[in-house]
Image (tube, rainbow, N blue to C red; front, side, top):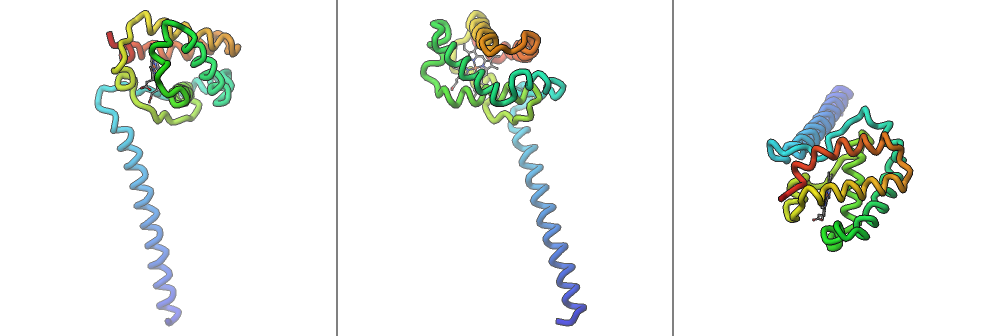
Length: 170
Ligand code: HEM
């Protein structure tokens, strides 16, 4: 190959790899928007991020704190005769993981929630207002036991409260 041919081949190879990289990036970004668009129109985002609350997430002890909180919360739910019937037969580790991920995402902790939306998750259960309040009460007990500052507790509860619309099924 002459030097001219070599440099032409090099230019071709470089532009080809740039093309491949660009189309891979495009495919990635359209996959991301596809996963966001996968939620049907009108279904509220179960984990809308609030980056301004990342300081609150830190008050929960970041992800290790959130994981420990979910262990405490699930133990309390299973001891509570009002909540036990809902939770005794579900996969505890998975639910704890999804809850920690959801709360981390909500509080601007940078997690991406990979679970189902709130309506789909709870549709199979007969949940009324009293059940909802009982669960919130148990979460408050768990947060108090973990010494989460009261104001931080209330920030999280304020984000969860509007979800009663999707969670309460009767
Ligand atoms: C704001 C309130 C609530 C939030 C944010 C919430 C959030 C969640 C999340 C993230 C999951 C896991 C989703 C997934 O599997 O992909 C879940 C599962 C579950 N939740 Fe809730 N939840 C709430 C209230 C309630 C209430 C009041 C009850 C019942 C009294 C309840 C019962 C359950 C049960 C039984 C599961 C396991 C479902 C299964 O594995 O099929 N939740 N919840």
